[in-house]
Length: 224
Image 1 (tube, rainbow, N blue to C red):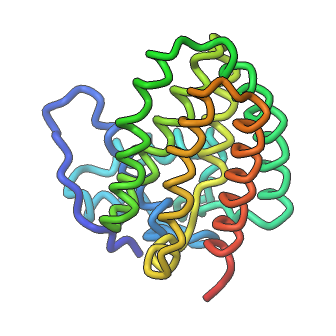
Image 2: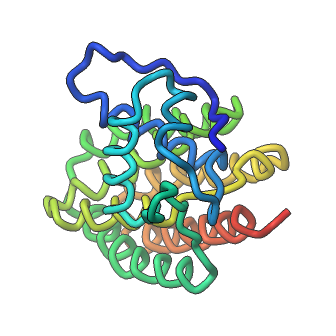
């Protein structure tokens, strides 16, 4: 039960396992791998056109991240994320990211903030081009790079882990309704507010953005 979109993997590279893990995360985000469904490493390996070993190793990496769970003699089940999980992830992210954005607004160098503009524009561009994986990768880069300006590597790791655990399902339907574009444009709004040095306004924008993201999660995880 694989049938993933074929992705070109460079077998000559040393870290094929990492490439497979990245491709599997992308499949989770796009909804190709569905929550509650069990997938076997050999079947997924056929979709990738590689041996089962790097796929199995990559699935173990995802299991350590809480994205899948081993099922004895069958493979790996994609973990299901319920509304309670999403509420808790949102709460933790809000506790971390909102005050951190306020602090960065008053401490970060203007040139460091401006350096984020091309990434924010990439998010909007990907949303408008219906490039879901590109959207989420640019979104992740923007948020983690922004938080990195606080100088706390553990904080960035924590938020990165929360983002992985709260990945989106069913983005295709959201994209077709145009719901991703407003969320994408909020990144530029946040950046502009931070560049003015208005910490309260930046925190308010971040609060609204996380609420918007939570609503996307709810739509993305609701059965069709």
